[in-house]
Length: 128
Image (tube, rainbow, N blue to C red; front, side, top):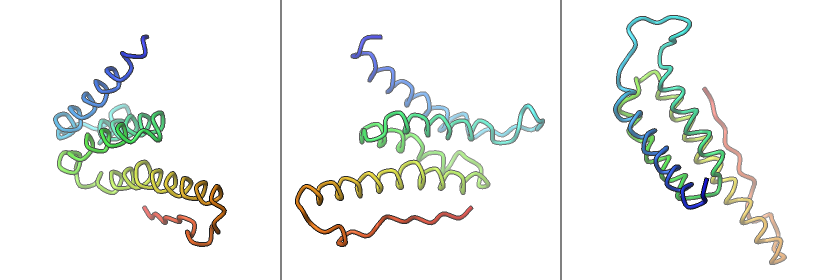
């Protein structure tokens, strides 16, 4: 694959994910089974978004695009999925960006010779 095609393919993947979340995730399964668990489309959508964020960690445009693609999920996902959706935003977007920011500050301080006591460690507590 040519390098110029990669951003186009990534934007198409994000667009498809956004479409699935906005349109398809609002529908519910009527007959659950072990092979068709409830909210499986919503769960796999979150896992795909998590994978894209993991692969493109540090690329603020990709993080922003994926986050904006997931915002409609607060309307289309059923209420019982909202805690999992919030946990996704906290773990995959907010925490990663805060840790990266903290690491960047810490490396900037060590280059300048400043004390690291000015910035306490980032500690986020989650509860499910």
